[in-house]
Image 1 (cartoon, rainbow, N blue to C red):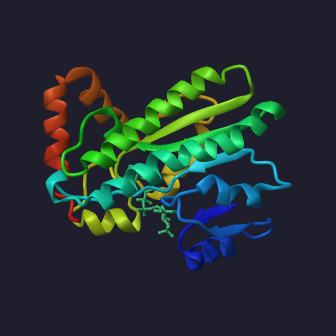
Image 2 (cartoon, helix red, strand yellow):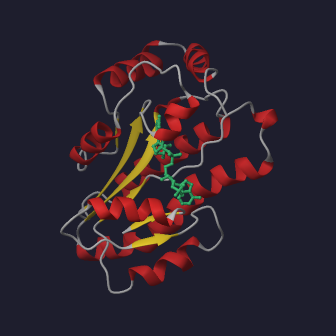
Length: 222
Ligand SMILES: NC(=O)c1ccc[n+]([C@@H]2O[C@H](COP(=O)([O-])OP(=O)(O)OC[C@H]3O[C@@H](n4cnc5c(N)ncnc54)[C@H](OP(=O)(O)O)[C@@H]3O)[C@@H](O)[C@H]2O)c1
């Protein structure tokens, strides 16, 4: 089951997934009542794996953000995954199997200038995954946060035309994240990014880590 706003984009992905049943639905995960919209789609179906990948990532200094932009980040990145977890986790636990992958980011590990609210939502995703991983141990349900560095997605390439160190192709991130299910609570795809995270989190004073990250994210375009 694929959910996003653009039906045509969902249909294009579904068309590539040959030989299996694919359900698509245009759902705005930033709108009110996400659970009420998704619940009927799940009737008669068992969700074994939930991957929460969607994100609203407005770029720019906080003072230039509109309240609508920051609210969209909070709704899409925080509220909607919690609502979907309420929908799918009880069934997974009852069946004694299942997995959840929450897309987080290296932004989760320190404040990130120029994407302040987005970065904070990614810290929320990591924190949530860690807590659920601990709560659900022994139930057969695995929870994992994928704390990726830069991924060469269309939206990333548009906002960072100059590139950044450690960029990964989306397929590599997907492969490493799926391989890490069961080794939670969190993983970082790519050797360079694991090393960068080690430097930022373990070796640098936190102020230096924040300013190092800011030196990269100031290159992001809105
Ligand atoms: N790209 C990077 O460098 C990078 C780095 C670290 C972490 N991440 C994380 O990786 C994930 C994917 O990143 P990305 O670069 O692929 O992001 P993206 O292109 O901005 O968006 C990914 C998907 O989210 C969907 N989406 C956005 N708002 C939505 C809404 N209101 N309702 C439903 N679907 C919505 C979009 O589909 P529609 O437009 O059709 O709705 C799109 O397919 C995100 O969680 C991001 O935080 C990305």
